Image 1: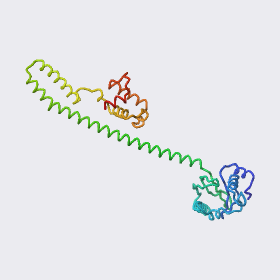
Image 2: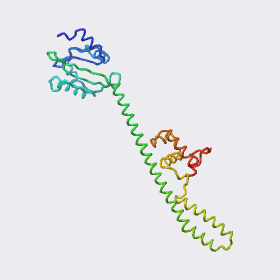
Image 3: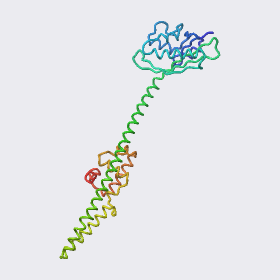
Image 4: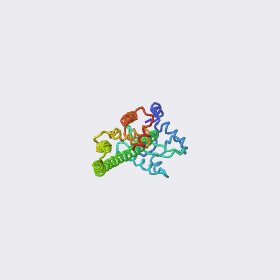
Length: 287
């Protein structure tokens, strides 16, 4: 059988994959141009086409950091030759003569319909794919880190809002209790003890105002600044802390236009519409 028929050799030489043909003992019978080019770059001693060399012996004699990989490949080839598996595939890497790590997919399979049996060993370089995979992994790791950071910030924001809500309720309860238990009795006492009509009028007005204050503290009178919904309150708190609309959008998982919309609505609710004072300045003074 002539393994170097021109048409078949031309086909092999046109492929970028490094290909060799071996017999049942592992002897190299033919190689393509890509294989030979790599052999020349690697400054292999002897024939660049490696014809007459034994592939299995080359693997078994390999030393250094590549020994384990070479031994594994040799075992895979032997299993295919013995018919234990229909084909063998594996991914391996090595440091080339320029000091660069390169990745290859090795495929070993019998050539069908040929006797005595011969086998093809193909080394397809996949370095560019591995580099891309590594970049994707790094990007995914970075995204996961950012997600964790955002989740932590969201958790902190929720806890801060809860604490502020609790603080507000406690303050309002304290004010209401003070008005009911201290101010009211004092006003009644002064009003009853005063004989002058003008004093009575003044205290009547004062009492009305204090009643209004109690209604505010109990939530019966709407306060435009306290009348923010949850999302508006979250945006307001982050604005107060100096975060930009872009950062707020990232933390609250909103679009930047949505954050800008909430900022405008907050300004309208607290009476800042058209005012020159920034929302951050107002919130820092008010919160």
